[in-house]
Image (cartoon, rainbow, N blue to C red; front, top):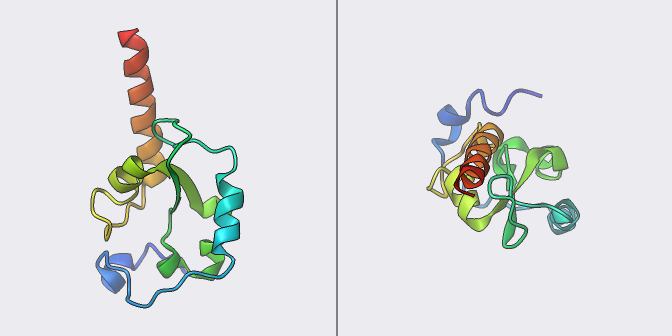
Length: 113
């Protein structure tokens, strides 16, 4: 399967095509994925959303339902890190960004204590 990130900017310029529909299995996959999860940035366990690392409309059905393509984020961090503060944007480095920012935030809180 070709790498969906290789031509992402050429294909979509950060915009989801109209009419992209989710699989009927999505709700079940999301529910199972979200069990016992916390936000990858702030570690809060409430208000969580499942974010696709490779967007479902770009990566195909296989990646839409693959738990390895998901990351749990609270609503605030889903918008900030998952979509770079623009719901039409894609962040191909979302995992690394969340890990880096989350570590900095947690370390700063420990210093203040």
